[in-house]
Image (cartoon, rainbow over all chains, first blue to last red; front, side):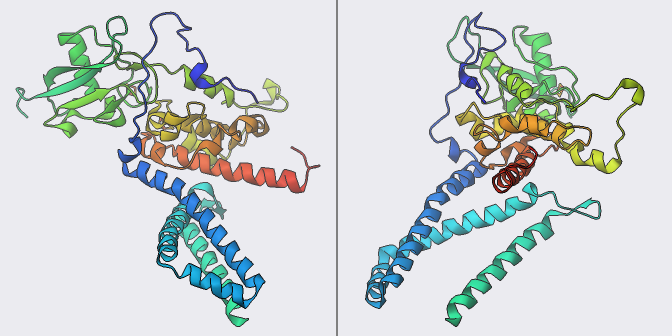
Length: 144
Length: 249
Ligand code: SF4
Ligand code: FES
């Protein structure tokens, strides 16, 4: 579907008359409102999610290589800066997850017996599923 | 409140034939408890400075033409009371994110183009002959889209949206909510026709859920919710197409 970029489309004035004024977007627009700041932070959290994936892959790789490699990985990840990075990453991952769950009821219009389910139960179901999945994974790992 | 109370309106002026960017002009207007910012502007226009340009019509939150930035927030000036900004000054600017034509008047051509792209009308695969009568709808079926039909095209949501500010190609909150108004209408069969525009990169996927459109909306439309719901619809649809490519589109 091809669409002319809005910025280049002529308006109804059709080019006659003086050009309308376009206000430039200030560099720090995202500091002007709490909602904008949270939004930018949530966008940024994607980077940390990616980091967690890389970290997990590195760990899985080290485990596959045998116990020597795994010990070296543990030493490496025990360094203060790796721990710090992971703590920061955890905070961002939490921000990401919590805001995602908060959004769920707005994306899902669940109807039960002809009535739209209120946001509370939908959010609760997500947390419940999260807890169940975590428990299942923990059980799988700890049992072995 | 004594009749002598006054409040200052700081109004953004832009007269393209005499200046290259907007400037501020201050006016003092009576501060009355029943006066809105729009009443203040009308007082200026009638008694102080007839050259001030702005749009308005209904004065009752129905026509959607009086949207401006009041003290930094996108608002309908006919429902923003002067007393809420007392002792003032009240800063009145044109709606953000739209080109300013003159003073407080912005150019909405971009939205009008986008609105037609999402086909906001009832589409039928085959038209029913008139003598077969009207399409019937149960209260529940009407409930499914009614909220989205309350949109008055006031553009407060576009003014509040940083995604639209940064990417003017974004179809935007009201256009998507209005597309959903028809998609969710039991009489409509046009969801597939709207799909290309809605699920394009400039459609719902450009939205990163800032949520400010819903906060700004004076009609409780919840455009952010409409967009998230369509994301789910679009994702489910793509998944179905992937797993069942022979299925009916
Ligand atoms: S969705 Fe709300 S804020 Fe946006 S144009 Fe419609 S009524 Fe105005
Ligand atoms: S004048 Fe019609 S909505 Fe304000």
